[in-house]
Length: 103
Image (cartoon, rainbow, N blue to C red; front, top):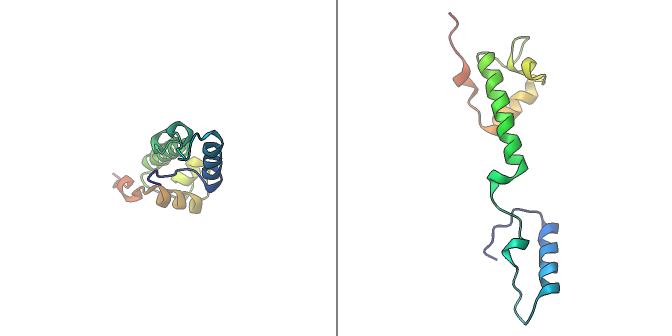
């Protein structure tokens, strides 16, 4: 009950079922190695998010913070501008820090 479950309900059900099958005695104990890791740094989605963040930030740097247009970050990433705006918000990127005054 004190473990933060990072998986879905079906995975939890399977882990409990497995624990019941292998249980010895009257007390149900679930071994920690049967539970998925709660370490977000090791998850695939966290790794993909970091790669996505890097690509978006590089495109924003190259486009001087411009999102749309032929020289914008969306064109560089081959994404619709609305999709790029959504991903910027989702990742919490401050797009305004990439804007540089033109010389």
